[in-house]
Image 1 (cartoon, rainbow, N blue to C red):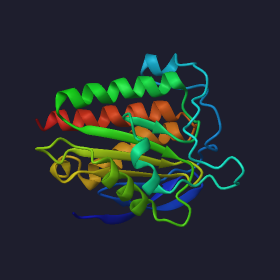
Image 2 (tube, rainbow, N blue to C red; image 1 turned 60 degrees about the horizontal axis):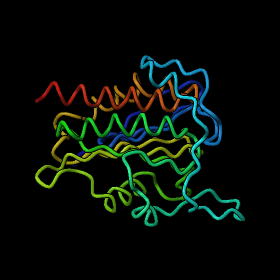
Image 3 (cartoon, rainbow, N blue to C red; image 1 turned 60 degrees about the vertical axis):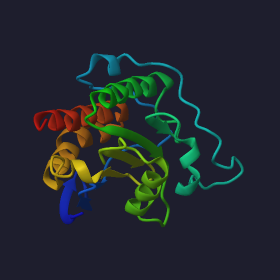
Image 4 (tube, one colour; image 1 turned 180 degrees about the horizontal axis):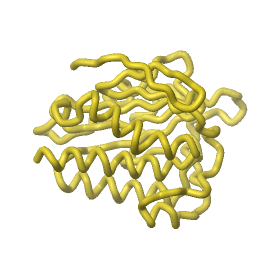
Length: 211
């Protein structure tokens, strides 16, 4: 499994980005507790989502100042395609993304999962994402076509972890372009549901081209 490093300038910040499993530090995002407003979504459904904020499972000690969740504790909590442990997405936004990912899974193209956490603390985001992916075991029995999108919002980092059987289609360059053009512009405005939806659509479109 190959990877390479490149420098990408986002707004005022310059961050080291690693792709094959594409690692992006997202500049200009608000904190994880900020609500998603004024969504400039090309998908009308995402624009209309206004449900009450999602309350995550109680993995974070309310008495602790730390928002860190150890990745090895997440396995049993990953019950649906989209798992938000930051109270960033609303229930309706989660359901919207869940339905999108379930339809993708039915096509047999990808089995995708999204995880939002506050921080990976001192753990490299690649290691965190890999630990989550191993416990989740996405992908069909016959194809290593799993894909995990991990967001660490307080760290302003994102990592896309791809299965071996989809690497030839979702190459380093392809994933980098999707992150840069489809996801990051929305994340800069804290439009997380829009960015995720656009990124998912772009990844799926690329896979369909190579069927």
